Length: 598
Image (cartoon, rainbow, N blue to C red):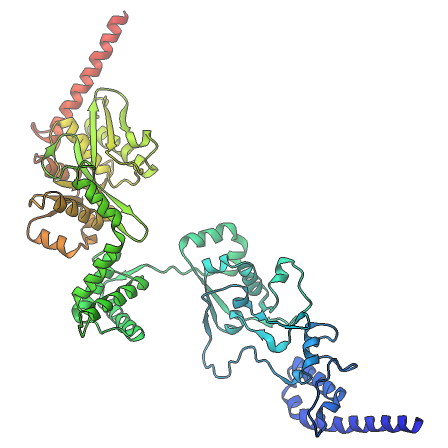
């Protein structure tokens, strides 16, 4: 027995000696290549020891080679500690697993910096996954089941993420900041971050990280991060780049727009666009930003329009997408979204909403409001009335008293008293009360775009001159009486046009008064442009309150002379006269009270 034992030991040593020589021959070149990579040298040494410790696996055999679970005394898989870990369990089922390589990221064919855009930046997609499989009532894993995340794929290049998506994914934002701060990518189970119990598993070494992270989002999210995550955010994201939603309408950008149209047609297999069709798309881009000198850069909306226009062109069996196909796509989208607008038009037509678009009225005017439904906005006229009478209350904003007005609207009303006081109260106090109301308005009012409209109604009530009801007005005003630009001018003009056409047909005198600065913002529908060209509808651009008063009353506004007096018969003369009467009335009233008291 001693002889057998010594013979077996001698054979084992002989096998190991022969194995050493073979391992040295096989691994010699690999060791030479790994001289400057300590981790690789250690891996190759561990792999050689594994071969020598399991030499029987490499002997020739006549029958099938059985799996050797566990292989007691054998070293563990290189890079994974021995024991009951998930990696060792998997190794027991596949003794050749240490020789299988898992190339986490293969950049061998990459000749430029990687740019990775991750549309779903959850933990696994960002930082990788450790996959598992069920085995004997538990879950096991091995190094071949490690999957890279976006930070691994973008290493050495750029990673582009949407801020809202990252913030919504549990743990993703904190994990991203930690990776950038520590300049390493750790591939670990996300459950570990929550403190939950998870089975012992693989713990790969962190990968050195060198990448630029680009986070996109709107201004509100940026402000949120700078205020609530101030220290980390400013430290890690040092560069802010703002992108404008519009560009100048010039030859270069027109060519870029046309190139975008061509590329979209190629990518989406759309019909080519005729010159007129492309021009209509450019017109749509200008209308989206309400500016004759700009183009929209919201290319998602432009792409949707191209696809819908292609649909209508194919329905007509047209070889090219023409301008009327683009217009039809625009009209059909409006039709899908404008139910509220149609219902309001019906209420105006059947008299449920009181509105006059013909004739003249004292202290009554048509203002213009924009209703924003999120994906669709439209304008419509609304009746504004004013009553003036003796008193000392000043301007009574009924919307404010009912808590239905915003701060901007309240500011606009207060500006009116400044204008009237400077123009008519230089030598005597203004003793009047004026109530201002947006009739049949139940949703609240905000913005100062109706301040000039309210001032016209006040002037009409004080002067006794009626205002034309066939003209609606928009525009804010300052204390100097200068008209200031407003937003939504296209929707407002078209809203008045639609109401006039639906109510009694266009009379040829109807129109809208707008600030002169908004002329460049006019990008009106084709039917509105045609009506204006034919003299059936009008747009008046004004610079001052006096210009607007002359249009609405048909009477000269009148300018004060050196003594502060206005020409007789003018609008301002009649206003000053009425204010004087109210002042005398209040003086007489208080004198009467004093006389009775004595």
